[in-house]
Length: 263
Image (cartoon, rainbow, N blue to C red; front, side, top):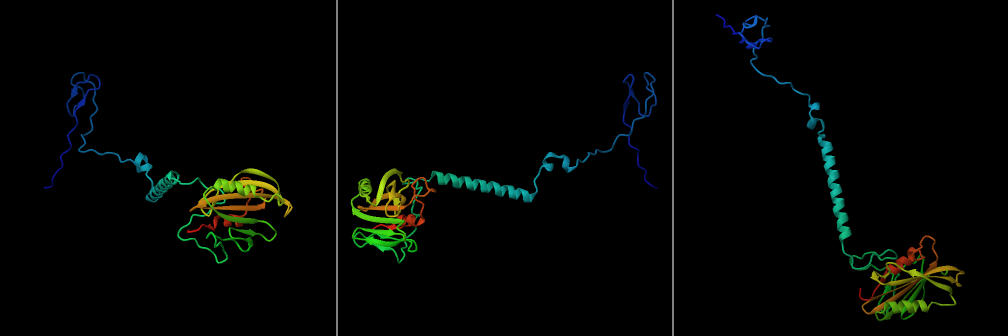
């Protein structure tokens, strides 16, 4: 004998005219006689529609894993750059920022070439490019380096004491009036230093009778361990450098590579 499946019970209904309950299976309302359509059988369960993933907000805007990694890496790089910038800007500096003719930061002992000039009286040394300059004159206190055509020139003089301003003024006053005519002070040398030692400097213009052309003159003085060194640089006036008139890497090198006594 086969089993039979019982039909699902009919859902109760109500008259659409008077609202009275209508007995299951009745075709007419027992109160007003209004015909009543039979109701569908009660559902035995519930089902819910499944929405496509693209219609769900979070799913539609979710980044692929590879793009998420790229976005995270970019954000990390921005954070690192900001931290580095803040650290650099907040770093204290003992001396004013050097902006011209600055010696490179030294790590360890200074390396001096075999062609450098050494002064036995004061113990300082001057390194220079032998392809551009040569020792023209020297004495117990000073050395003068000069190019093949009379320019550029660099004179280094050592003396005792710590009065850099007085030494600077004496050097400017001592410029050869016959060699340099119409000397005019043009300004100070920003970031002036001699061999990584901060100092003071003056920029001048003049007409050189030796090479018969306008020249720029820098006089820079600094002191260390009770010794003052004055460097005088002369070269043709540069149109590329309106700050100090000189744009010559060989002279910059001389200025940077003065090695002080005991260093």
